[in-house]
Image (cartoon, rainbow, N blue to C red; front, side, top):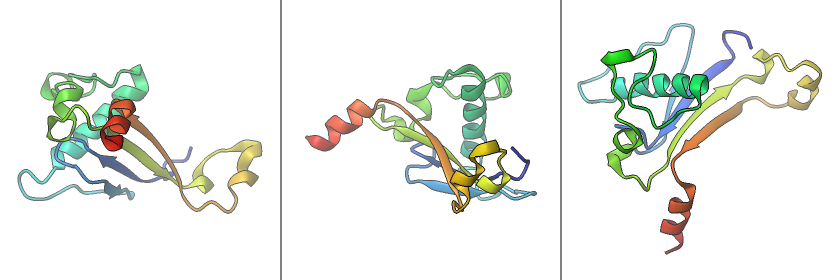
Length: 132
């Protein structure tokens, strides 16, 4: 994967963000805003994603990179409004032309954007809630 393969990432139901937020990434990405606007939530989501990819653990209190400085508090704390029946979604948008797909590159020739994501939480609880 080339360095500019990731165009953006998205998150939903994570800390300050209930609705899906799309954060575009460029060679230089600045995160700024008023207090309590969600700047730390963006950084915390990246720490969680990195930790999850490295360890497979997603019910995280502390990450290796964040150390003692960042306490995510586990799923019950970082899920939006601490509603354990919500699911957290985290995804990256990739430019397939920047991926090293080998012999599979023809499959993605007409694809402009590829999204890969993960859902954290109980989808069964979500399905039961919506069917009731």
